[in-house]
Length: 266
Image: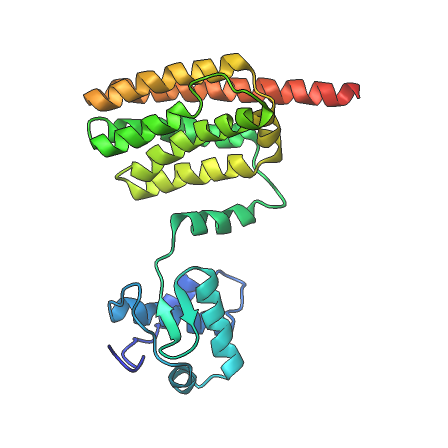
C-alpha cells in the first residue's frame, strides 16, 4: 500500500479550467478532495484500502488540518470514503451506492420538485429500453424475485396500510428491473425517477388513495412483461413497457386533477 500521495500528478491549467465552472472560485478543500480522488485512481485503490494518514495529507498539501478535514468530509458525504476510529482506524476507500447517489441528487430537487409529467416523460423514454435490454437475460433467481414482488399486490388489499404498501411495491418492481439492467447508467436514471416519485408528496397522496382498476391494469401489464422477458421477446417487452408507462402517466395525472378538485371544494 503506498504511503504517500506524491505520485498524484498536479492538474494542468487546462484541466483546472475544465474542473471549475466559469465565474466560480475554486475552494481549497475542493481542490484537495479532487487531488485525493486522483490519487485513488492513480494508485488503483479499491473499496476497503486505507488512505494516507491525516498528518501525511497535511504535509503533502501544505494545508491546515481544518482544510484537509473539510476535504475528507466532502469525500465522505459523496460516499467515496469512510472513517473508522480506534486501533487500526483511519480513512478508507468506500464503494458509493446507487441509492446514496440518488439521495444526493434528490436533494437537488428539494425546493423545486419535478412534476409528474416531467418524471413520466423520462420513464416513457427509458423504461421500455430497460425491458428490451433484459429480455432473455434474467436468471431464474432474478425472475423468482420479481414474481415475489408481484405477489405483494396480486390481490385486493385488506386495509389502507396494505393498499399503500401494494402501490409502493408496484414501483419496487420497476426499481428491481432498473437494478438488473446491464446498462448501469440507464438503470440508474430510471431508479432516480422512481426515487423522485417516492419522495413526491403528490405521488404519495395518489398512492394512499388508489383506484382498484389501476392495480388490476398494472398487474396485467406486468404479467405480460414477465412473459416477454422470460421468452426473450425484446421488441414485445419494449412495447409492453411503453404502453404501461403511457397508461400509468394518464392515471397519475387524472388522480392528481381529481385530488386538486377535491381540495378546491373544501
